[in-house]
Image (cartoon, rainbow, N blue to C red; front, side, top):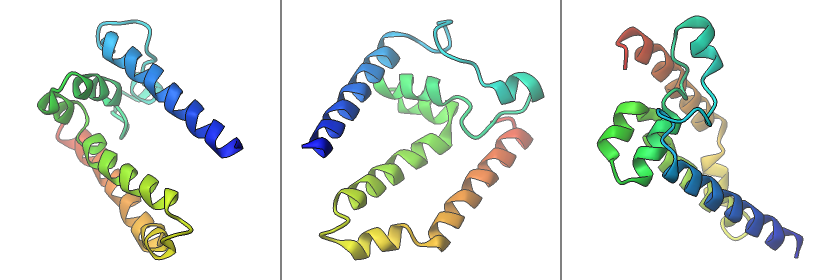
Length: 124
């Protein structure tokens, strides 16, 4: 019962956030927070542009989302697969174990750090 309630609340929260990101453009609205790292350093963090990318994706503009934050488009399918593996953790423990292998986690972290570096060098 408790797990079902958590799932319902998470889905409800995602729907509300999805509506907000669909209705309001983060590049036009003062409602959304700005990146503190960018404000203080002038460099983009790995997540910079994610809010605008989500807004673009919700409007079906994949090219704009790709322009705003390419890493987000890489991460979304990965997160979906990880959530699927989590939901099947007891029925398919091998899949869960493979996706949570330390080497794979370190590789994804390295990919994020590489993205962070390259997007600032080439101004992506």
